[in-house]
Length: 201
Picture (cartoon, rainbow, N blue to C red):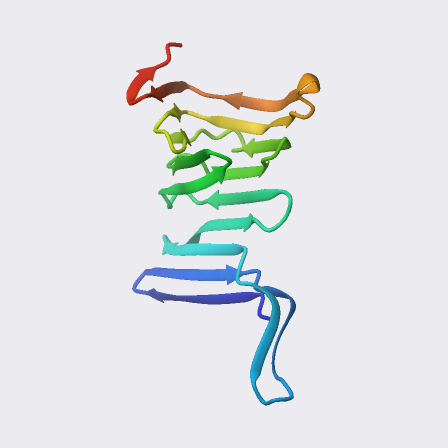
């Protein structure tokens, strides 16, 4: 399979291009079986790495996004030239009866790395190379009720920050933190039975 597909243009001092990396397969084949019918099997991974580029001031400015969601450890890494401002939406991740959504505004952060494994023993790793986000918001909704927790933070930055836990057996649960995490401003809201309350800090 191809490792890179790239399309784009450059014209009159401007340009854009889009590259897709990581095309791969696992025992994937297409063939004709003995009865003359088309058949295929195996797995094909479309991509795990894309680059969006703008031609500005005589050079390419890149937004580089890589991810891995197939393995035990899920991860996403975003590297951004300041020429790119964008918002990333996660809608939604379901864990038991809880639905998780997130919105991340990348207006000042040039590097973002998130790794996680959510289970009774798991972890979350977060790194921004100590550059702050403009804003980041999370919502945890308990379904089928409308009870939820909302967290809205600005100035969030991290340097190799992680939290790891082991929740089983309950009498021996363990929670460990490493690295640095700073939040300039944070608001937490709890909605119970339709009434929204801001938690004081």
